[in-house]
Image 1 (cartoon, rainbow, N blue to C red):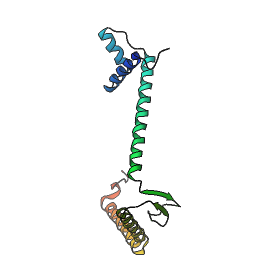
Image 2 (cartoon, rainbow, N blue to C red):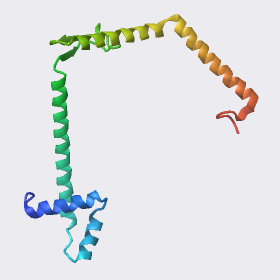
Image 3 (cartoon, rainbow, N blue to C red):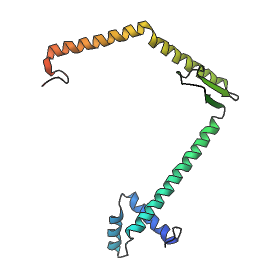
Image 4 (cartoon, rainbow, N blue to C red):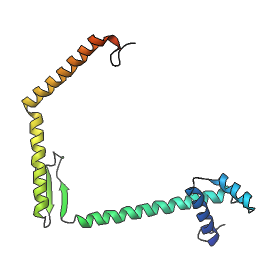
Length: 160
């Protein structure tokens, strides 16, 4: 049995990595080995090296993600949120926030955002907005109807 931590395996792994960087696989490695007159790495060793490289890259990626999570958590230590129900336009009514020394600026920003979202939701539920929306839809459909009459059945995705 081969030792995955041996110097030979590390050399093979570096060779496989180099061929992967130029976009080549085992067949290109065999051709290269024949061209320079050395024994080619067999397919099983190539596959083991690929698997080992994949595992290393995955663990490296997970480590980077964990570090970035820690940085974000540390940066936002002043906020600790717990949800008490559904998300309702980001309002404090349905989202309870426990805060540890929240800065006045962040509280002010969140209040302004919540007021803006409430105003937007109230505007969309108003009868004036609904009437305007319906009139826009009717105007669009009448324009399409006019174009169909003018250009015939071949207008848009019509009949050919």
